[in-house]
Length: 499
Image (cartoon, rainbow, N blue to C red):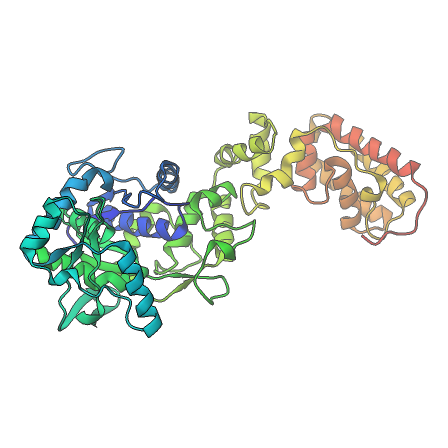
């Protein structure tokens, strides 16, 4: 395939979600695979809903995913400006061309008339379309009224007979009756173009060869093709991507269908502790095939394997379990220094100040046990807090009394005290005597090690016990065991607690 020119053209009206990210991803992959250009264009003609904050968020999200554009509002390019509100005069000039060629007309209908017309159509269950009143105006009269300053819009003059056939790469030919296509507004009364005109003009002027967009645009797809044909331009390759379904597979996915531990917004996923590599793999596979789905791919591998022929129009279920799976795989592949660097902001966000050296020592022992970066806080936050002082009730393990626990702690502390400072840096030197102790006591390893875990870390779930003791250090480990022993001595002897 020759080099392509593709564009990501979001409307910055809200949080940037995974649907937009997937569209950007496919654009990026095809551009890089063919040595083409990936363009970011901001479609901000919806001036009531667009916000600078939303535009900044979507650009930050694309940067986080590693989807860097070649031309755009911040980097410039040969087709600047790359924001549609700055291209108002370009669209007006093209709208005038359509009027002159008989493919568009001025509409002077007041909003009140249009509301009455729509209400009557709803009442009579007629198609909700413009009734063509101004379409029948003499062009000279329409020009004079516009010149006199009468407010008006510009509508596309859709053929009222025959059919229009359009071609989607994934679905093939789609044919519709022209009478079912409305005379859509191209330019509003304030002079700003709507998407229908602006996007088609920009795609042509910017030399866009392939258009990736949501299948939700299929309804106006014939209109867009008619506009391009009215100008006599070559159409791009149209690729309408599949919609996302809820995790249940029933119904379209929305932000109302996620929990506090989930998100469909890109920066929300980042803040939950997901890696951009995992998110990229996850969204790329929702609607396409790149090979074995359980194998995480690098960006270079995604670029190499991408193919339009591997895309599917079938709706794709949003599977958060698969995202967790991918994230875990990528976490295991990180080098410990890289993991330490990525997890640092999450500790800082939790109000902790992780020491750099200590964080690098912790990274390898949490790497196999966390699914997201945020999991590191619950798993290893105790390393950066003052020593925990768990009460006796938390220290007790299932099937053990306080008296049994005191004996276990006494002997465990004695066994560890016999390990020299130099040897204490080797977790195997700690594990051997403690496993021998379990045998002598006739208890289960889970009971004794669970007791030691809570005593040393203050929590029932932690990184591997012996590696944790090495990092906590000999002096602190012995001190914490001694304190826990005192807690249990002070506790009244109780029956075995079912925990």
